Length: 239
Length: 222
Image 1: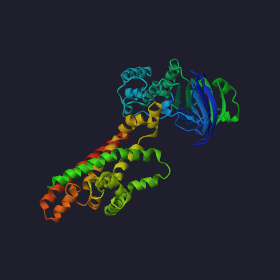
Image 2: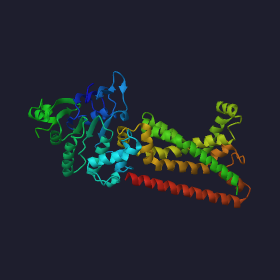
Image 3: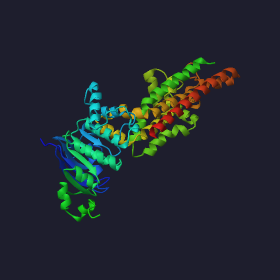
Image 4: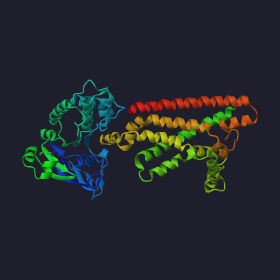
């Protein structure tokens, strides 16, 4: 049985996309490219929030999407953890409530304790009873990460997770994500347009432009020998 | 003071609001989240009772309820009495004319929910039904309660349709609004004044509640 995530997509709207790539357990792959490259749409298709015209998505041997076989699992039946760019926290629930909401696979009595442990993992102990409006941007981002980890996801999807915080917070959160990788065994997909961020965090880059997969490989390799001028432009290597 | 008419008004308003709470939730969610093609057409149909003269609506309902119509005939066969000039017919008419009062506040409340919050619930493992109970309803409840109160209050005051469809049969279809008219016709201004005052106070209470709730919605979004 194939482990990790395998994705092969053909999408016509909102951006025409043709891309195929894989992400092994414990690996962090960065989808990188300018805005309009289709990065977020690919992430949404994996989570089941976007319905691609054609494609196949399998994770840990379980088929989530197979357009030919007519298989299309709804989002709540795919074991994904997704951190939205806007965080999309539930405004009426506390930090604990937000995380516990994603723990429906556990008995109700165990959810609070597990939510507390996850909040401690992202260094939010002491803020469990605050609502999203009472938390800073960086703290909200951590609640979103704890919520995404709550279902024991088979793949962790991060959509520009550091774009809405200031530079200092971004640096700290990046460091924490790097630390977190020792505890997360799932494949991690990071969407970003920031080459420094991708190069610092990722094991492998997948370079996209206008929905087309231009090149993939380890950051050092891609940076040392970009496959084409389009890759150079997509990564803004000339500027 | 015609307490029988008041009790009947409260019964009609309660039933109307009770029927339109689930029906309005379904309709308003469909309009807010699912209907794409022809949405303006559906919204116009929902709003129609707001602009239609009540006597016109009442006339058509009376024709539709009459013993000669398929609906009226079927109703008489199944329930043993006609739909027109009965409480059941009054309730059906009341539900139809109150659709915009129930659907519009709920639809606005659901449309105000950010799309990514519902998506976040799904990817957190919540099935659509659970997402409705745990995320959508707790965030949209001021709009839902507004719809309930507006429907209730509007039913208390409805006159034209109630008169056309129900006649003014004491204890069966004579509501408080009709009883006030009846008392004025009989030069009994004392009773008409007392009943009017009570309806006025109930209307003010409804408006205060609805305004308080819309303030809550605004704060939450802000």
